[in-house]
Length: 408
Image (cartoon, rainbow, N blue to C red):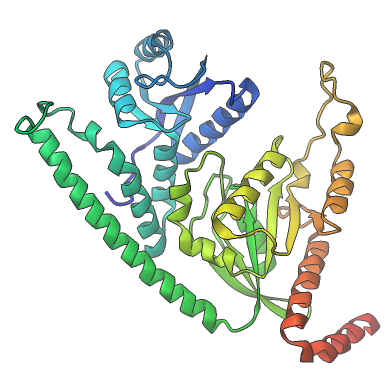
């Protein structure tokens, strides 16, 4: 299967999401906007969005019967819609039923992200990780692949050729998953040796939500050419560069970005990437401060790091990027919350986050190079503290360099 693409060319798509008690309308619309960005990244064009208010997804059709008829009518009237993309994971039963009704390709959020992963995977490591994630996604959905066969349902002696083929495919996939896991274990061992061979240099890892500018910042700090563009998951491969800030050498790592509603098994497939975060001495948490919901993105990253990377407790520098694109939030006349409870200006945000982080926050524009010296100083200070604890005999050396810097 193996890192194949399911979206070809500029295909037109409709997006479908639910408004539920757990997911109010504002959040549902934010998720759909992100889904549209994901579709664009994969090469599809979202032309229409459908929402429905429900307590929970319908177990067969995801949306209600009336809404599915509305979507079907729109698809048939347009005549050029190639796919329907749903904002939540769909079961094999749901996909099969909806495809039968709409007569177009049906994707869910996870399959769309996997398609992007398949496109972005460049190295053997990334391709292996993506293939493992694809097979894990495919395994519980095998049934839909054999709906064209005449299967008989029942007990012993009643199984049709489709079910026999499904069992065969399940064994093949389980064997392939096992082999891919072994390959990744070998990759992990190699990367572990590489990390040990780097010596005791202080390690700084760039983390953050996808498309916040980590790779752009990596290029700026390391003077390298890491691939960067305004797309989600622009890079899947871990990039490590040795840089020197003042007199202190350190290792800077760019890592894969996180996203809301990203299933745990997708993140786990990128364990070797996350190992760079686990073994980092300092985390540089990059945030797109121009995004209207950047605080929720911060929570997503922190939660993911806490659950999968043991990221909590590491020295962390908060880097609020894209200040050149920041626009102050306009007050909602219907909002009963006092202005003091909601910070709306860049200056207010800066003061609040510097206080919240004890001074470990900086507001920059990686694109324009704004406040990069302040960021370098913060990284230097945190990395120096770790280096001094690791090599206390270097104390006098650092003092001598600092004195030379002050007198120069």
